[in-house]
Image 1 (spheres, rainbow, N blue to C red):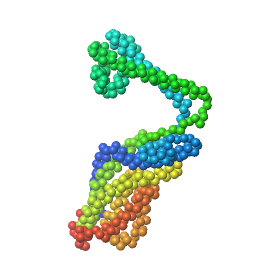
Image 2: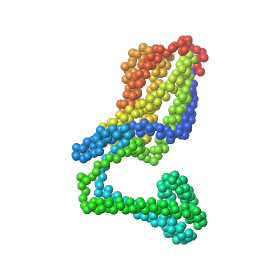
Image 3: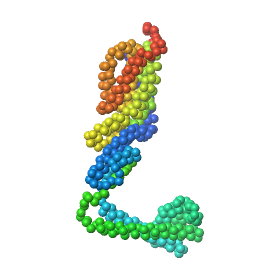
Image 4: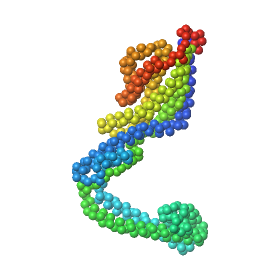
Length: 458
């Protein structure tokens, strides 16, 4: 095959490979959202474990410091540390002023009582109007109040019944359902007549809810009276803030709900770029069989007929090793690499705020680098069988090969020693595995005459 024919074959193979990659990317656009969520899982898991370890250490230190200062705590530092790990929660310490709480509680109870009194008045107004049998009033304020009465009834009625559509056992089956309340409200506000039976049901329901609200208002009044006295005492020193009165309170939050365990996007267009990169990654993986076939087809075009057998034997193994390397990176390498990097940030006291775009670049580099690196045994076997290298060459130069492997691992991985080691060590094992493959792989299936075959050129 002439040099020009080689270039033409290369052009055709590259074109077919790019077409296959394009089809894969189009399919990837359909599943891009799913891919983005999938590739965030290792990052979120590593971040969760990082912040759990950080919270575990911090809460133990805080409790120890509080005990040393004479502040009583309801649990020991060991118990709190174990709770953080077992329940996967993060603890944050807050200082709370009891005086502020009393004032705020008194104000909140007063506002709640006022709102309940308004609800009670709306219910009584609606019940009184239904009992009088008068037609729909024309006063806008009164209509608003009557409508509010229906809204209060609908919001509080399910809690009284225990079920939104039927009364519980032991209660009258003549009670209204929410659907009936909504229907009666629509008829009433539109001026339609209501049957006497429905009117009676509505009056009874309004009476029940009104009675419950009245009991609640009485309870709120008692609680507000007590808190009002405490709040008045708390306001005797409005210009003074004393740290000795603060309460030390730990708030526990599930680690998965913490915003720090999620990757962040810092620009509006970044999400679209992430989606496109994820689609390209997915497309490259699903189109890899076709791309590898085209690459090996180009290699086969320049070989003799007996040498082409290596291509057809190596192709499935090459694809399998590529996918195995990518899977190893995604399933087993990401977590220790991220753990190392996060611990390094913790050691330097740097707050973590990972960006999703930077993480995606990391995801793109590492699996592809592992997949390409895992081709080493087949490349060694291929070069040995076509006579470029011998098994003795591989064995005599293994020290140099190890150095080259570490250099290649540094190029194919992000700039951190953990990922370099996690790639270099398997590649060193694969190098010796390649030598074993050269020694024990059966030669009879690839045996061929030494002479050139006339049909050996495509």
